[in-house]
Image (cartoon, rainbow, N blue to C red; front, side, top):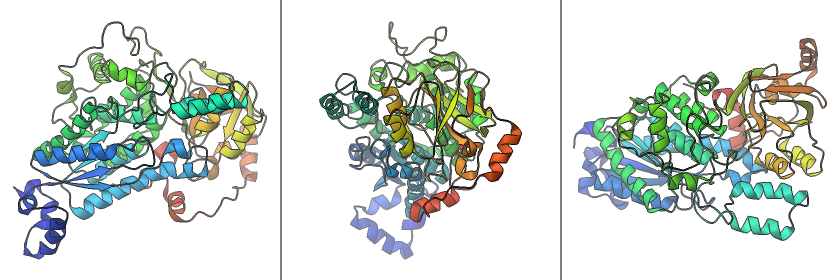
Length: 557
């Protein structure tokens, strides 16, 4: 086979001087003919750390089969994952967003070091998915992403968010110890990513709309035969991409990112998509900013009635056809760029030409003349509290404005204690600060506090602000990613208990009602709080990470 199709592996295995390399590869199963084939790395995120990834070894083996059957040679390797759901509310959560960078770095390291000509990545949890795309963009070698798939519903259509909210209900005496244990024991029945339109399903859908996974890869249950077939076909697809010399940056154009953003909005997806898509775009050398989300949000309605803000689970969307019919609807409406190339080797429009419509009578995906919300639920807010921007998730059910008195906490733990002890009241604006990318470090998700608020019945009665992040399972009047973060001296750092905070999702403003003079005086007297002197990965992360408004990345272009 031509060296053109073995741009990288030929340097590893060709020539007499590379006999030692070949000897090592023979030990892991290479035969004479394999040295003449393009080598494809299979980056598996399999582990028993989380249900999201516990089955991915089987999917990775299916991808290996697809690669080998299509005339290339697959080489499987692993990388890490960190479970948000397990580490949530603990210091361990500081490592979640950090893991995105570690995973991307590790995939880049192995693929570059081993000279792979192509790449299949398989991800199943929140951070390993954007990490896979970031690595693909950096490497820019023919690549396909495979989503691990969604979990089946628990008893009574419960999921992981049900458990978090049950904790709040239990603290209010609404459910007993045994009822909490019952929810805990039955909500997560097996493999797969969290079942609503939370971060994993949001990112899977965005990646498919971007063109970096096969059609309907985002809408398959983890344990289904279709997911195994998706993995097999992904292995075959990467060999085709090598033949075509079609690389990630040929696919991940500005228009592809716009497709991804529009899909996230239509599905009512997670705020984390903002952070992750900007980070992926950074690695793909595409100029993407918060303003692009605001611009596209003005024209794109929310059409999906999916949890956490809606009623349905991903498994129920899968039953009616997944997101392919939605993409066809959006393409026909002019909300997607149909000329964008995809990993099938065809354009998005070509992929959708034979797509079926949703069945009559389904209630999950609304029509354009009857949307859940006429414009985006993701609001990019600016003002004297967020000069560089903030990301709000406002479905409209909570109203579009909120004004209340600040109740300030300097960590997630102290805030959670305050909530559980009944210190948060109707009309409060709950603020958790010093949890940003550098301040945490690691920009923890606040699912514990927001779920406790919901469980206490205060979801539509308080607002929630942070320079940290929110889980894709969060709902309510929430504003995160406030930039600059408090640790860097952003305005959030000088808010005091009792200050009046105004949030207006109609004008996209977030402000503290004190004078510019008062703001300056408080900033002049502000002293950065002493934080633990971080070493190891957290220390490196704090020294390198950028603002949330820039994707919280650790690399320079």
